[in-house]
Image (cartoon, rainbow, N blue to C red; front, side):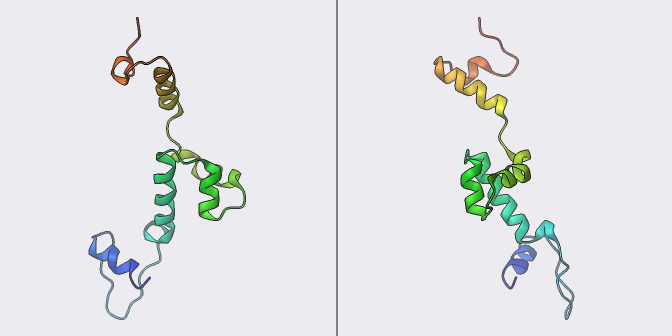
Amino acid sequence: MYLWKPALIAAGVIPERAPGERFKQSREHGMHALRHYYASVLLDSGENIKALAEYLGHSDPGFTLRTYTHLMPNSQDRARKAIDAAFGVSGAETAPGKQLH
């Protein structure tokens, strides 16, 4: 907290606090937000749920999946890229809305 809140102020994320006052509590700008960002970056880069659960200290990967499922990369894009790679097709040839002939 001694470094986190001043860093948020310096970055322009939260306003300065008045002298003698405490920082307002906010999950949006707290360590929870940093934890959520960490999870989203790992998921976006392809990390699996079981490993992420371990990194976050969750004993149940199902909990991690339920919590972060909205951050999972788009499975349609992943599926299309996997099939394109299997057939040696570049991504430009199968851009969304384009059909192979």
